[in-house]
Length: 137
Image: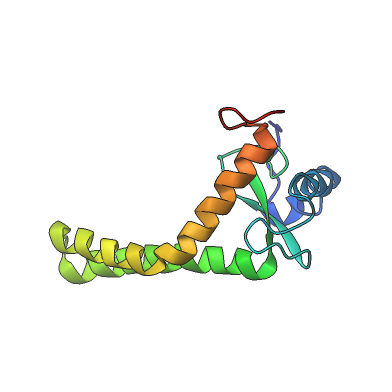
């Protein structure tokens, strides 16, 4: 890890990020792992670790998404978080109701989420070299 932290926007201009981003996109065949588009591609971190620079992740932690799928992914995440916060505030920590509403929210976005989950799983298998039982190299 780097000794000096650089703000994220500046990290995305760094030659090390640009090279890593190209490796991520190449690992995904130059296409969005969700819809298969080869236009407007972004390298998306599935999580962040405090103190790590954008290029200091493994290929299995960053995936290729087109701009549309990237925005959709973040909107789904924000919507779920906003619903939970709103519920907590309105219901004054009525946890049974909160869990029920979270379940409804998760169910309503489940179809879209399952597309991402399936795409991530398939991509992880491909990048890590995972093979199903009986599958030849």
